Length: 260
Length: 348
Image (tube, rainbow over all chains, first blue to last red; front, side, top):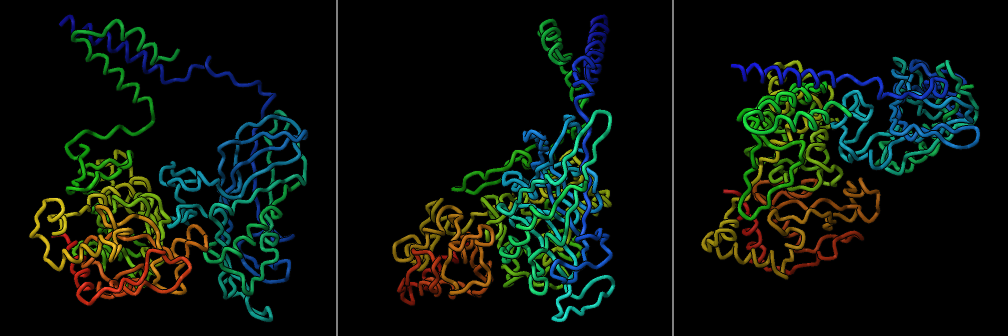
């Protein structure tokens, strides 16, 4: 009996030690002084030329062709802040799924200072692109999405998904019915090799201590569709229409800008 | 120094030995409980890792470490495989096109999905799928687990979304329980794809008369005609074994077999985007081939006689056609012998 009590006492002591071990030791955390870093968030919005995209209205391309939008979603990775001296501060491991329903992305703390812009890739690197989406936590943007942003038939992500409708009539006389033109339009860009690097240096900014920084980025749909003849070039799953997919992908670097 | 190493260095030295060992395990449990993971699922007979039953002459298949087979997982996977709840309108299951009594095919040129839509490629058998290094006729998908999402999300097949399928399954309390029992985790794209793949790997077969002949040395297992066909198949006359060799009668490569001069379906090139891969498709296994008609990626040949005629002709001209395919100049008897041999590959 005595030994049993002894055993119980010892094990409770051990448990106590272990349980306290769950809490983080405040001494172990050594945050940098608050003045050195500040929170950064990216905020996205879609525009069509000078109009904001509201997913209800119709828009006209640079070549005066009419279209509507129901979906604009894309993956952004390889984000790096470019300091005014040209050096870069990479935000390693950040994958964003930019979607009209989620336009704010908090990227954590970055060094305060003066920046001339930022760089990123639209799409996903070829290693990550072929991993199994089901192995990610469901909250991870790389996990299986609804609607899907992954092609299970070639195990790769849809880097950019643009869906809507367009006017394909010869005279440009199609009228909206229930907010849509009569021809459906979609561009699903993916496959390794269709990632596109974007460099935004149109508007320098500073990150100062004590004020969270929001960098506003706009995506110009008219720029994405620049040179695309919507009368005939309006549907691409990348496969089978690689030329068209490449044409749209090649517009990506010029479609983004920082809102000053 | 963290708590765990304190425990190891101090208490371990003090207590190890004699009958005190049991005490060491108590804190270990608490260390694990610090993590926010759900409580590990209980050990039971159903959660014991089992071995897949492999026929003589077959290697043990490569099984991913995150999906080792257990009875609970296999039973759950089988139920999911035959449950139409995984399609948008709850009409089509995996088993609708991979019917157990039809050697896991549907014997149709192309299969019918939700809303009576027709697919574009022939549904292959899933027998011995545990041995496939990649999936679909163009090999675009790298694992059996990831393959599961393909038909569920293909708009012409089950037309659903994996997350929506998960949400629907979560409404069934029995599934919630079965997933927890099988994986110690809730229903998710991860556990859903793993359960189905776990079941599919059980569908292994290598129990034909040909196997009796080769593995058991039963010389009476094959008829004279079948033996003649076997010699054509494995010899220089037919050269069939170059692509259809090995225990599963496939080299798992991609080949253009001269089916067309112009391909409506670009095959492997759909994945690689290389012109040199146009018209190439995965070499299928020939096991149970007599029961898995029609043949080819588009189901364009209805009978084995037509297939043998095609290879006897050497195929149509195409820049990517396999150089090994030349006219065979088989006699009528030899063609029949070859067909007869192929029929001996059916499981008993």
